[in-house]
Length: 451
Image (cartoon, rainbow, N blue to C red; front, side, top):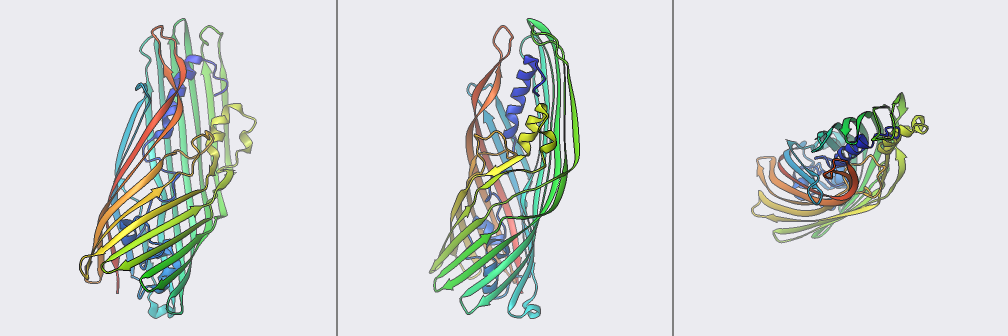
């Protein structure tokens, strides 16, 4: 908004946009937020070394070969309630939001071994990212005439569809590979309308609309090795970076301004640009996960750690048509993406009560790959998340029924620009820390049908 020179309007707009990155359900910079599979969910995904059901299609394809007979069908149904609160001291800004909705999950089934012999084949579908948010903001200064209205919408969805192959090598080792076709779609719109008539000079108007929309298809692979040695189960899983298949999108921005500049003279600005059929891209990192579980009596202990490589800077859409447009700076920043290297870890516990009933619990980390000091990024969330899960499983005939709950929490502090209004009514733009607190509760029911 480089050509909008009305300082009153600019001040109003800055506050509105400073709040937007803290909208609820904005969890787009963590790798372990979602877990998959009836038992794997109760163990927080700490199953790279121990999984023997269809969740192995994701956590360790090699473990499918060690399953005595993979289940015909596995699925999880869950609901989550999310809360996010952001405030600055003193409470110039006090933002809170909450949501209740179904959670993304895994659906998988295996081809009967009567058809495949010594090999194991399975199909799976899972959601890696899913949130849909809308933020409405209204600011009215306590003196003079002034108003700011803002609308920010974001719809992000990423789904993986996989074919897994596994084969047993000897009695103790399993090897496997899952080939995924990944779809990622993102639609974002940012809109602002501001008016100001603040002493000593009346006037001002502003309109800014930025949006982009893209879809992208790519391939990636997960290769797994699983081993059983007495009371120990061990596993190693390597995930490759994705390879682009195809994708495109559109991007646009509009800037308009009118009025006086608080004594600095009239301001008039009009800009418009829209680009179709832009190339889209998305890069995911190398990752290496290692896991182990140890059983003693009725107790079993699980541990997993996973390293994710850094992702170099890139644009999710071709931004070259906008490089000569100063007003499109905000749009170019939001098309930019990169990721830091992170290591996540988790510990899980399983206790068998009877031959058909077990209890589970886990604690896992979920560190952000976003750099909160980098204002040019398409990622919204910059806080680390920690997960605590607990639940139970019960065998009902050939079906394993699982029930449990998970609690996630995290916080962050980041600098934002806020608008303060002295008694004279002239707005002053200052920098203040924004404290963000995130929490989420999930309740899940899963089933795993055997033969």
